[in-house]
Amino acid sequence: MKKHIILITATIISFSGISAFAAHAKAVENDFDGDGTSDIGVYYAPKGEWDFSKSTDGVSKTQFGYEGTKSITGDFDGDGIADFGCYYAPAGKWYIYKSTEGFFTTQFGFAGTVPITGDFDNDGKDDFGCYYPPTGEWYMYKSTDGFFTTQFGYDGTIPVIGDFDADGEDDFGCYFPTGGNWYMYKSTEGFYQTQFGFARTAPVVGDFDSDGKDDFGCYYPAGGDWYLMKSTEGFYQTKFGYKGTVPVIGDYDGDGEDDIGCYNARGGNWYIYKSTDGYYETQFGFYGAEAVSDDYDDEDGEDHSGNENGDNHDSNDSGADSSHG
Image 1 (cartoon, one colour):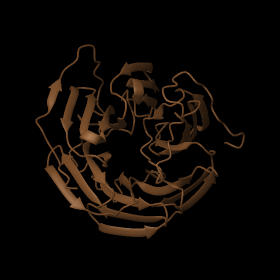
Image 2: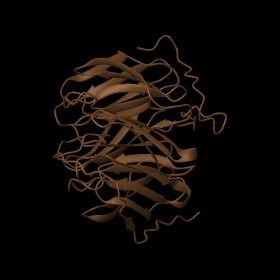
Image 3: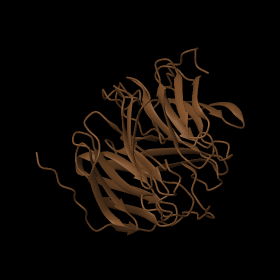
Image 4: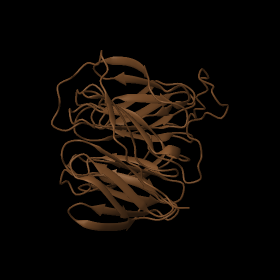
């Protein structure tokens, strides 16, 4: 079937009552209050409900989105504060709420694509795009450079985004869980390929040794096993988590080094190991709500939300295993 990328004129609507915060030079991932620390949050698509626990501003809630959408985050207006939104793949529709500029919507993509975000032209603003795994096609709309498309990848791969060569521009690539194969296209250094991981692992990306380069690795939920390849410090392995959790990555203590953690959607349980502050555990969320930092889709289509019973908003079955931590 022939596919079409459709880009229509975007609509920008300003909402009243939105607070502006001082911008940082570069936004920390999922920093929704601009204090330099990643925050936690969940999105419940059936009701378009967003809940955030911000390290400085505290708890907030808003309604934005609808069933069938996937949460996305990024600093789309370059003010140093993470924005949030959702993508509806069947129609290629994007809905983004920017902290400074307000509501933005556009059509860009088609059914079967996976949303991606990153600063792909090094202008300080995150861009949006989509990846179509069956043919390895990438489509990006860069805030400065405009439309870009390329073919890189193959069916069964999962898109990964990060600044792997520390030039300030996010790179793109893909991970094939079955063989643990990584394929990256670095903006400065070009093509890179390696084997690191195994079947049923989820790819993770972050700067885990604070050298300015994003590192890569994988998380095996069935055993709570983490495997990281740090650009400066090399191989690292640890056990932290349990079956049913998804990986979450962010700088949760604001020390410039990304931390690892996991989230259990059945009970809204967060388990984070901060590089400076150590172990942290909290309950934030509810049955069926996805972590806003969860950009991993299992290769067999397994539902990580735990929402097996439909719109069961109030269930608090954590499904927790005592082996976590």
